[in-house]
Amino acid sequence: MPTLTPTPEDTVIYEFCVLYPSNLSQKEEQTLLKGIEEIFAEAEAKELLRDAWGRRGLAYPIKKQTEGNFVVLYIEMDPTKVREIDRQLRILPHMLRHLIVRPPKDYEVTKFSQRFEQWLKDRETAVETERKEEEKRLQRKVVEKAKREVKRTEAKKKAPTSTLEEADLSKKLDELISDDSLGL
Image 1: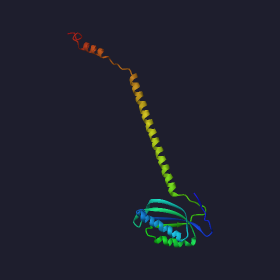
Image 2: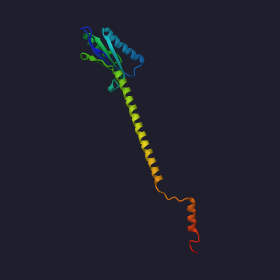
Image 3: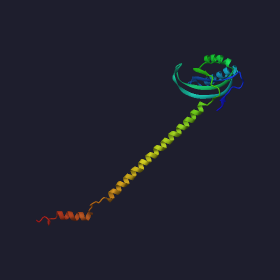
Image 4: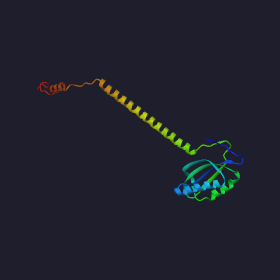
């Protein structure tokens, strides 16, 4: 990202953050942004960078609004015109709040919107990795359970069992039931 250094000696770089309601129609939003551009054009200011953050929730309601759209503008302009721009921004319709800051010398600009998108991608990758690890863990559990079942069945096969064949069993039952063994 670019480092902010003013070109001529009589200009300074300012960071303007504007907040307007998120429920504006597309036409009203365009009119508002065009009005902001006109204010800067009248002041002979040069827009260096625009970073639209988009719709965000507010910490507290402002003019009964709980969400708003944020736009951050880096403007190079004459410092004597800041008060006039501030006054014009205050009376602009649909403007909830604005903030004017003079960044420190050699301030490096980073676009929040790009960093936010990168964070979303990183978070998605982290969630995907976590899901894969959980899947591997479950697979290991299933394999361990299958191994235990195999060991149990092998142990049952090895255990000596006194199973009599059906024919032997019938023969023994006949002997027990017969009258000869009773001595009658």
